[in-house]
Image (cartoon, rainbow, N blue to C red; front, side, top):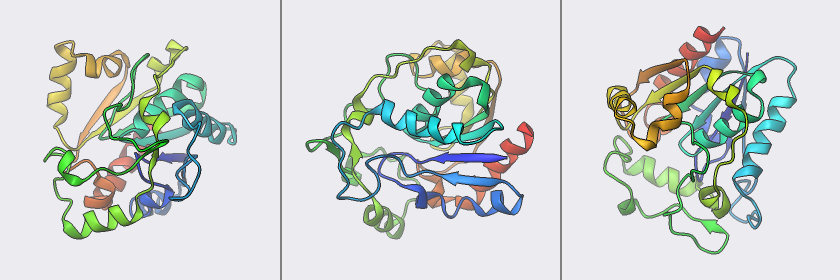
Amino acid sequence: MDIILVPGFWLDAASWEEVTPPLVAAGHRVHPLTLPGLESVDAPRAGIGLRTHIDAVVDTIDAFEAPVVLVGHSGGGAIIHGAVDSRPDKVRRAIYVDSGPLGEGGVINDELPDDGDDVPLPPWELFEDEDLTDLDEELRAAFRARAVPQPKGVAQDKQRLHDERRYDVPATVIACEFPSAMLKEMIDAGHPYVAELGRIRDVDYVDLPTGHWPQFTRPAELGAAILAAVDRTA
């Protein structure tokens, strides 16, 4: 199976490096992406928007004849959902890592402080305690050293969706900051934050208790959870 890995904000393809070994060992082909504007701190980010990143994922999907599995962390969840909407017949499963699908008209996060065309990694004080669970000082320093500013347009552009066949593509949610039971309660209560997730017809939930960056805090367990989801798909 070809597995396309889409990182969250401020991260590139290398951020998946400790997650992929069990997937590779199981015989899958992994394709971690560095999205436009995330190539380096000095990369140009003007004019790069949410659709730019969705199109980069769609181009990768189109490079394969067989259907793929998409994995999206954090803001990458919105990006892979846009790709599912564009290619619902070519995605076997969408896996959301501490994230979920972003519905029509939603934005990933337009409250993050920006600097021109950039959204730099904010100070840790701006994150919730739940975000930072298990992210110790060493991991925080390593994360900040590797962080690349996010293109502002990706954070602030509205999601545009067109094909309701996206709801037929099976999904797995790997819940980290908050337990899956809370997500299910929110869906049952009609909370707008999970409205799009609630429309997907086949959703599996996996609890991986840690902070918002399990690829750093619990990479082996995250790799195993992704592999289990892929195996169910196959």
